[in-house]
Picture 1 (cartoon, rainbow, N blue to C red):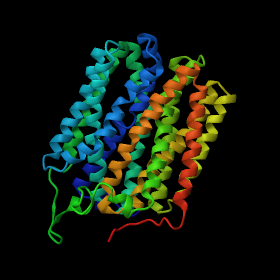
Picture 2 (cartoon, one colour):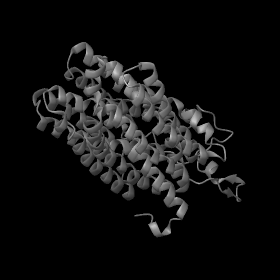
Picture 3 (cartoon, rainbow, N blue to C red):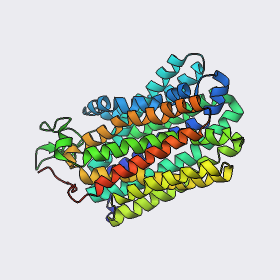
Picture 4 (cartoon, rainbow, N blue to C red):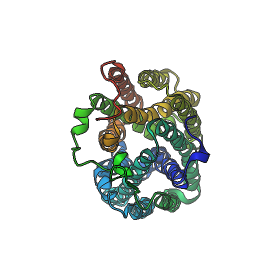
Length: 414
């Protein structure tokens, strides 16, 4: 491995810890929401697409607010903003517990507050990690930190389901919001200031791409890196599949007659298999053997796994799909960010991440709202997952263009 824990400074270890906390608590939110989709539909009598819009609005707000969050973090008080963001994340859930089913607009407002806090934490942690480490080391460490997402996928839904059974949906949301106030610690772990690089008279973060250089416009990345638009389309398609799969797999299983206490066990299977996928990704990144063909294969394998549900509609069938798709999603979601790190230079890295997260707005809308609408119109989840199958095939074909020799990876704009 290209790095050693003993060689890291205390500040670098704190940044890694902050990134792990963000992945554990916040990136697994879709699976947490999946636990109470069916109970919320039964209680509120709202349509699936409306519930999908409400529950994914936090991610929508996060994605839309990324540019504003990037601007806020340019100031020296960025650490304070991240701490305030952690408070907002928990506040949104607590507020939603008081207005649950009473007003759709109030619920959207509460999830917006939580989503804006998530935006600040998300962009702060990933750009700080990139700024503190070299390219090859970043890929390995990001893969390692991203394993915490699968730990959250496997544990937080179980915790939420237990809270829901004992305290109801409102009580579970209130307690879960209080738990999410632990994300305030992320602000304490990040550096309060950016150190000065005397050799170039620029800040270290500026050199590493944490702030946009004066010569870099918001669209310059598309000109400087020809492969980035393709990667952006691949990311959008893949994330649409991920959010739809994460939000509706458990409700799909429940709709077949499987008890909710049994269906929620799918999140454990997803968490374990996803953890294995991310560990494999960490190993491949440390060996520097990553290749875009892995994204192509993963997309087609996920699409193939969905066909199992059309002929094997039992809990065991759902378990097989959860294991296969969870492993591939864990592998590919991390690989896409590492691929961005490989094809985009340091000066454009933050711009690339901002564009990637911003375009996830389309992904979340497709995965949460469109799939919910398909469920409402068709009356069953089979057609919704058929739509996800098509998205995976499209994503796989689009990813093949990243394998073209003429789209060389660029590490410096020179």
